[in-house]
Structure formats: structure tokens, C-alpha cells
Length: 411
Image (cartoon, rainbow, N blue to C red; front, side):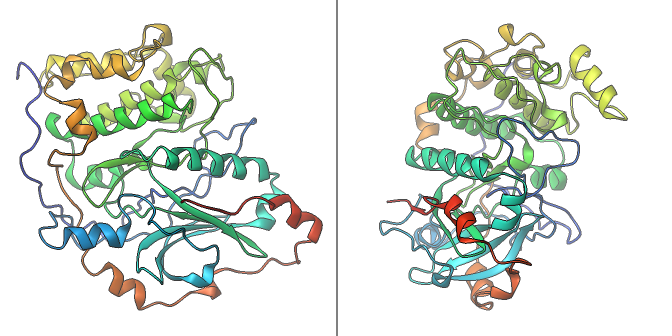
């Protein structure tokens, strides 16, 4: 057993393509409440689950044309010129995700050929579910996240609307989600788990600094960008204006990642995000969930009472970090204090990480996605207006006024 985590990888590895029949989640956002999850009362919004998704033919280091790839994907955020507020300015490619509220398309901005992901929401469904407030809340949080220009948080480029739909134009993250990587590779070595965990820690640090608690951190909401770094996505269940010391009792999230205090409907803090990070780290290293059962009731009992099983093959530092993050008592959980992420970053598991260097993204990631051929496949399909079905009845002018102020474009 090593005395400390092994150093970060020197060179990226090649990842083979996923099986065609695999189900993946699209990280730009999520459409439909995940089975077994909880929908909050105070700020409900639909999660989006992928029904069809294909990733690039392989994931490997992009050895040539890195500048053009960055420009193509808008990997460093929105372009200097603001994105337009009309679907006519985009070519819509394949469907990345689909659900009851709408679809997620891979899209190409015609003027610059920049790729992005466009989430479409049906106004009639939003009105019927009384989710207008939630949609505006998600937009507000995405705007705040984007304005931070943080390297480990997804960017929102623009929002606009048509007579029947709302559109979120998002950064496209071509590497797929962390769930896909684990499904394909199995358990990660500690060095790889350390790299991805560090990305998440820095992302959570920025969210908490901006008084945002995520509340649905999980493998499917962690996406790999064009350079091979992780970004936190999907703020549908997030809550803003949530400072250190604030509490919420809204029961929301995904069962396997829920902290005990959420399950018990106690007032909880942003420490629930650090618990979820502990679950993610455990799954990356152990290739199973720390708490598992035949049904939800057994699962919740396990989360409340059981200690996660750890193997001797894990370093003492990794074992310690997992147990500190999965501390049942939130007041004793790593990251609970006002120091938050600084407390987590100081843990011995991250001894080999230079956090300033990591924040500047100067380290070699475990792999980089292969994005060759993306624009060709996108341009083969012009705007698929047929994919956006009109409502059974026209939306009244009074109802249209409910969406006033939705349009936005990042500068």
C-alpha cells in the first residue's frame, strides 16, 4: 500500500468508444426527474435524462489543431461577440438528450461555426407544471456561474425564446460524463481519482463562494471538456443566496448521493455538497456505491447507519478523505466549517497538488476527447425545426408575458 497518493499522470490515455447501446447523461443539463430522486417543493425544476446519446469515436489526446478545436467548441467561454437570440442562427445536429419538457441538441452557430448544446423547453409544459419561477432561477444561477468565468463550471452563452419554446445555449462538453468513463474503464487509480476530485473541489469552492449550493452533485453531472478537465453542470436543483450558516429543509437530489440530514428532513447546510463529493470519490475508486440496498428504505437506513467498506489497497490518505467526507454528523464533516473548500484542499490526499497550478489548468489530464469530425456530422443536418413540436393549443398573450425577461446573452 503506498504511503501517499501516486503523482498525477504524465500523459493522457486512450479511451475506446462506448458500446452503442449504453445509456449516458448529457452534461449540459438534464431533462426529467431521475428515478428514485426527489423533486423539491420550494424550487422544483425538471432534471433531464438522456434517451439517446453518442460520443466521439474515441477519446484520446488531441495532438494537432488544439487552437482551432478550442475556438470550435468555445472551450474558454462565450465568444467576444454576443450570441444571437434566434434559433435561425444555428444549425441543429443530433439530439443529445430528450425528456417530457423538451430536447437537448448539439448545435452549430452559423456565423462562427462554434459548437454548443441547446436545451429546449416547452412553454406549455412549464406553465402546466407551474415551473416558471424554477426556470428563471436556473437561468439566474447559470448567469452567475458564467460571469465567474471559472474553469471548472459550465458556461451559459445565451437564452432566448420562440412562441412555443425556451432555449438555453450552453457550452458543449464533448468528453461525456464521469459515469461513462467509469462504465467503460472500471475503478480509477488513485491518481486519476485525485485529478477529477480536485476539479470538483475547485468548482464547489467557486459555487460556495458565490453562495450557491448545488444539491445534486453526481457522476452524471460531472462532464469532461475538450481539454480533459471536469466541469460541474446542471444547476436545476441548486439554490442561490445560500450563505455559510444558512439552512434549507427542501428534500431534493438523487437517492444514492443524499446526505443523512436531507433524508431525515433536517435543516441542512452546504455540507451536503461535500457528502456528495465523498460518494463520487468512493465510486471512482471502489466502482460501487458506498451505501446500497434492494429498495429506497434500506438504502436510507444504510446511509444513516452503515460505515462504507474500504479495502487495504487504498492509501491511508484516500481512506481518511472518504470517511471525513462521508461523516454522518454534518458538523464534523470535512468542509463544514466556514473555511469550506480550503479545509478540503488541505487534506493529505491532495498533498501532491499545486492548487494554483491546477486552477490555471497547467497539468496534463488523464485523457482528452477526440473531437475530429464533429462539425462535419453537425453540418450534415440543417436546422431540424420538425423536432420542435408546436403545442396542441396556442399559448395566450397573457401566458407569454410570464416569460418576459427570459432573453439573455453573455457579453
